[in-house]
Amino acid sequence: PTEVSAEEVVRPEDVPGIVDGLRRAFRSEKTMSAEWRRGQLKAFKRMITECEKELCEAMHADLHKSHFEGFATELMLVHSEVDTALDELDEWMKPTKKGNSALNVPGWATTQRDPLGVCLIMGAWNYPVQLQLAPLVGCIAGGNCAILKPGSYAQATSNAIARVVKRYMDPACFQVIEGNRETTNALLAEKFDLVFFTGSAFVGKIVARACAEHLTPCVLELGGKSPCIVDKSANLAHTAKRLVWAKFLNAGQTCVANDFLMVHEDIADQLLEAVQRTIIEFYSSDASKTEWFGRLINDAAYKRLAKLVAGERDRIVIGGDVKAEERFIAPTVFDFKNDFEAFKSSELMADELFGPLLPVYRYRDLEQVIEFIKDLPTGKPLALYAYGTDSRFIAQIKTRTTSGGLCINDSLMHLANHELPFGGVGNSGMGGGYHGKYSFDRFTHEKAVLEKVPALDESILSKPLLDTRFPPYNNFKKQVVRSTAAHFLSKAVNMPLPALRFLAKVLVAYILLTRVAGYRIVRD
Image (cartoon, rainbow, N blue to C red):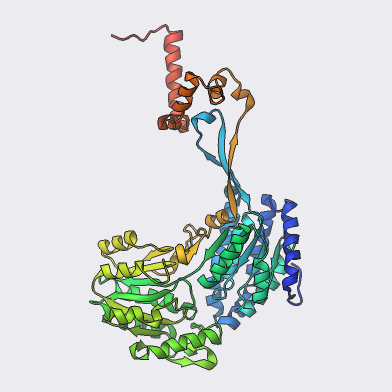
């Protein structure tokens, strides 16, 4: 790797030249080969391995993340992504065989994944390493060039990403551009082949409008209010550990954190007692003194959340401590009891909280909960969490709610399975999920390929049938063309190999019996 002494400032007026340079690199076709992609993936793997300390120290400076939490919640997922890509790259790049239509026999139908070109990956500040580098794995595996724009609020991590990418990755194909709003606007004014954005719905709309100007496809990974529903059949100790961990991880600054809790009234008191015990177990009686609890990203985030705490202080049953000088707010739980009107009209429920605040409503009827989730002001949630062992409860949640992801009896952990797509729906995201093979698919185009052989088309068996598609059309041609629309015929020409072998054996047996042995098949 090449050593870099300091970050280089990119001015907005420099952006068009950088994009042009990446486009020239892509047009040279250097990114097309499996060898180049594998080489860059290996360099990427070395980067996140050798620079773990540098990246974790930066995350601690920005968000008070311990080294272990930085690794476990950010780098570990990125390691999984790149290891999967290295293992599966050859398989992902292979053309996929597809069925044929009757009018295209003889012929071969496949799809192949083509690189998109020059992509813009815009990361977020809350998980500044994971949300910037995980999409890059799919981008590299797909054979693309990219500009990375880290979340600017996490300044130390943004600087660190800029340093390490320049040291390890091909500079002709990958560039990191740091900067403020003017730099972002300059980037969005350029035409890319894909924009992959993670962040708020407000900025997501700006990105989508900019992409529309160039007819550029975009993937928007957004957020919203992710509900947590606890049925009276839930295992309370099991539930408390998982919802406390998911809610207060990274000081609540997690896009898929359980934003609010709706718990059946029969077990609400017991659950809240378990939640309080778990908070103390995880973070001690003073969370400001443990390395396992984070800090808010900046003063604006602190002031917004502290105002919410002050506004609903009468509802606080756990926590409520704030320290402006540290940008610290303790894990705080608000109990609205059975007052549904107060719960849904509270400022806590107006938008995604993105902090260590948990409003709680005690429900009696699951129907009320489901209808409320369907009408959330923030739209369909990025994630939904449901705890319970009653099969009827679980079935209702699965079939009657819509969300980007759903966890039953756990929280956040669907992100840890790269066989599952991670992404939102509607206001919480669009453009498809990613992770694992899904990331490769996001950064490639599935091209339809039909291959024909003239000698076969012109053969004595094929030509009379294939020529029926050309004018002039007589009755015979019309009949043949109409018959090709029959569903059974499409199934017949796409018979699986074992079925074809069986038919071939029957045909051979028939020929041997009738032509060689002299048998005749007659009707009675």
